Image (cartoon, rainbow, N blue to C red):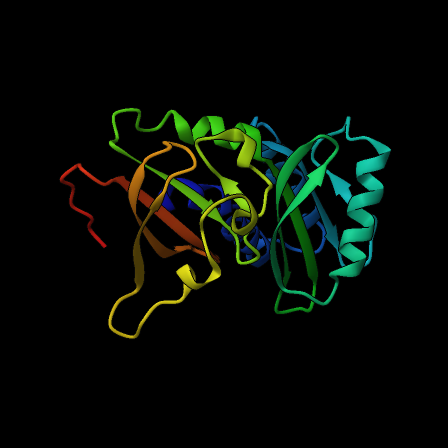
Amino acid sequence: MSEELSKFLEQQKRIEHVLKISSSSNLNNNLQLLSSLQANNKLIVNNWFQINENAIQYGNPSISNEIKNDVKAFVFQNKNIERLSVVLPQGKEWIWRVYFKLVSKNKTTVKYGYDINLDLLNGYISKIDKTATNYAFVFDKNGTCVYHPEAAFIGKNIFKVSSFNPSDTIFSKKQDFAKRTTMSEFLKLDVIRFTKKMDIKTQTGLFALTFRKWLQTKMLL
């Protein structure tokens, strides 16, 4: 799960590399190329970049004015933030928005962001391992569900719609996970639930892995 989600965060390394090797005359073209390539990913519904205080440029030429205005407001509100990962509603769907700001040695600033459609992400991840005898769901630090095998949970606060408690995210000094027996909202059965912090490169989320109680399984941490 960590490896799959990390793939969606590799764009920052690419932008860092381009910012490092580009001159002031070709930086814009190089960023446009990377932005266009990323836009080919069907899970990426919007992406954009801004060099210094110049106009924001978009990888998707058909992006709506409504989303453009939303992006402009978002960049302005977070102009002093170096990195941000947040789950937001967009129309009738939910997106995972990734945003970061980079500054080169010559003080050129690049702000870059993109939106990942969570319904499409959910479908993508659910097809990875259909033979697994357990299931997992991922939520951010605010409790907003990013991935769940039951699509109706996407965008919901996991603490309000499940038996999951904020205390399940508190780990002791001796172990980096929490374990308890609870009722699974998805399986409607008693399960043993493991909760563990999930490091996905530049972002940190929380990872919950649930096993059916009567199955003999091993968990490698």
